[in-house]
Image (cartoon, rainbow, N blue to C red; front, side, top):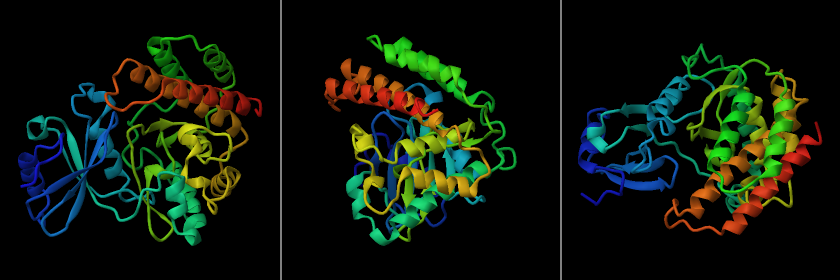
Length: 342
């Protein structure tokens, strides 16, 4: 049997999968697809070419609440019979004796991850527009679901979503940053004072953008991935996040400057909002506030990453601290620009 990558105990995992997948043909090979500080994702292939995907927390991470495999598995299982495309949920293992941590297995979905601008430009030009439309329509379909009707009514608190998010990310910066960020604090005050009324509550993906989905070769979204941050609350935060990640700003830096939708044919962020408006009855007049909030939130997340790099907590993943700080300044400036539109 080939040597399994770190995070996989091949023998017990193979036995567990064999007991749940009658067609499985061992031995299995495991290939790390995504790693780092987020959940680890492995492609599992059997002797006959069958493929599955296994998700588990980062190795050595002890804060189970931040990497809740049961929560992720529950969400994709609940969405299986809805219009929102997800990978088939195969099973959840919460016996740490099997693999050292909880994990779950889902079916493999054909398609590709369109991660950056180069990937966007490599995607079939004749299907880029339809993929963009499918991305928006899938989000509308998610937001139209009744959480209770699909068994997710107790996934989280529904009220005051934006206020809770503002408190959470401000607290992270206040407790974790090693420097003063006066514009960050000023923007928090302004955002808090201008929170729009929440229009009901729905399922919020939490990090919805093209590269967190599997793009089908036919120009549709084949599966929505990465449900780590999913909760209940104000769904317009998802739409605003997608607008922020669309890449309309020619001066965008870091990941925001290298998004796949910068490639010709995907349309603009205005097209995104117009499509969402055409398929939803929600009032989108406060979208600038939500986009400002998403810039501020990403700045908070980036500050946490900067601090971890500065103290060496990210291991061999080196990054220039000055470049990271410059990106945070850009995000805060973006939040200020969008707030001016409210």
